[in-house]
Amino acid sequence: MEHSEFFREMTLRICGSLDIDQALAQAFEYLRHHIPADAMGLGYNNLDQERVEVPTMFVLAKVARPGARHIWRDEADAVVLSEEAVSYMQSLPPDFPPVLAVNRTEEQHPAMREVFPGIAASSAMFLRLKVIGGLAGVLLVSAEGQDRYTPEHTRLLETIREPFAIAMANARRYQELARLKDRLAEDNRALAADIQRTVGVEVVGADFGLREVMEQVRQVAPSSRPALLLGETGTGKEVIANAIHMASGRSSGPMISMQCGAVPDTLLDSELFGHEKGAFTGAVERKRGRFERAHGGTLFLDEIGELSPEAQVKLLRVLQENRFERLGGTSTIEVDVRVIAATHRDLERLVGEGSFREDLFYRLNVLPIRIPPLRLRRDDIPSLLQHFVERTAQEMGLPAIPRIANHELQQLKTYDWPGNVRELQNVVERALILSRGESLAFPNLGSGRGAAAGQAGTGPPAAVRTMDQAIADHIRDVLAQVHGKVAGPGGAAELLEMNPSTLRFRMKKLGIRARGV
Image (tube, rainbow, N blue to C red; front, side, top):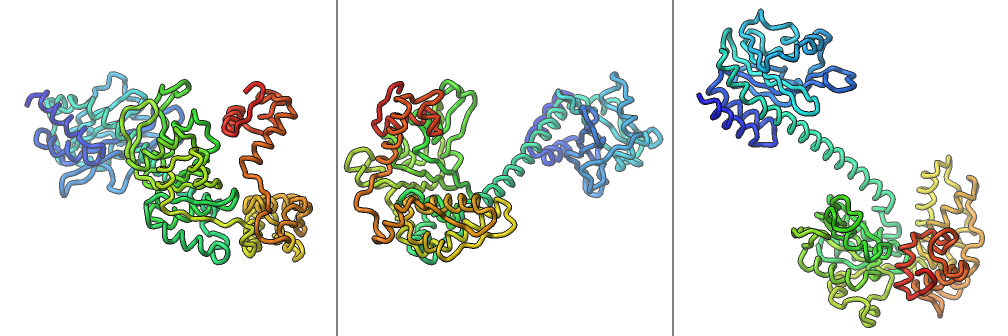
């Protein structure tokens, strides 16, 4: 037959599938009509690598007609090469023919029968494969009986040397990608388990102070509509968001979080929607945004009230259409993401002031859940305390769990916890560090501020600054100490342990002006 036709038909079959087993089977069925063949196999060795601990012939794919023997042992995915086999392969001269036909058993080198036991009492043709990068491989075709192959058969087989070399290289890359994908999936499962242990799948207080909240969680979890978590800073909004995700049908998908107030407006588009290479200065490669990474799962947007008006418009569009474009891109990306938003701010007041879009508020406020502050669920403090003590002691490697005296527990229960559960966790960590393994003590807890409030009642003090006011006053105090210097050594950003750009962004939002801004 015409060599060009054989080349074309074999190439179509070899390149017809990324599954190398399927591609080899398709090629084998066509090849049998033109070359005697009872079995065929594709493999490569690692002898050309710089460091070889165990010389091995790896089996990429193999196929045989019904009733015929495979070239390799049926169970073999890799064959360790003996010294004799390695010596034989390395002794082949550079000008060795690309196709070697062995028509009689006595012509078979012992190394051949060691590596390819299926060629015993058969004729065989070896097609040597070589690709860029030094990957050495072989395509072996065998037919039962003696003197089955002619010079015409070897010339015909040589025409497909390049397609099979490319197929071998692509199969190796595909297998490596599949292996990395499996490893990534395993790492993601382990990371998800770590996050669950850290954030908490079991919500402490679910049977007491958070009973109503958990009932709402069970109601909203099956839905894919946005959910809105409302509560003071430190009440555990991320824990509740994680509980919703784990109780939903998306629990096997990713749970991606973003702190909206920590991302400057200039980077918000890239963080949420990703960017293409070259979209802006410093965009040296394509980046997937949080929405794209959360596909099939949940996106938790903490402090949603910190979003700029421009970002609110873009977020509303994604919630309405479930599609977006990467920054600098032209193609539309469709996503299936459930959004859970959280804030400590009064969104209805912000809507009235015009700083938060009304349509976005109603889009998010479909399933609102209000999380009570710790001062309104003091009965949860013993359980939370025990949880944090045991977890932190384990992380610190303490030989025993320090005990807590009753009077210390009562002190914690009367304190007002303006920082809520997060403050309790920090107090426990500080106490464990200072305890040196002895019973825990909590001296100077809030300088008496919370205790006095707790004795006066369970409600908040009469005059309470908002979080923004407290942050603004603190920034102004630090700026006054450094005479208005924001960045550089001794500047406000250094004292506050903040990135100067983040500090300037926060000052702009709070209306604070200083020298150098």
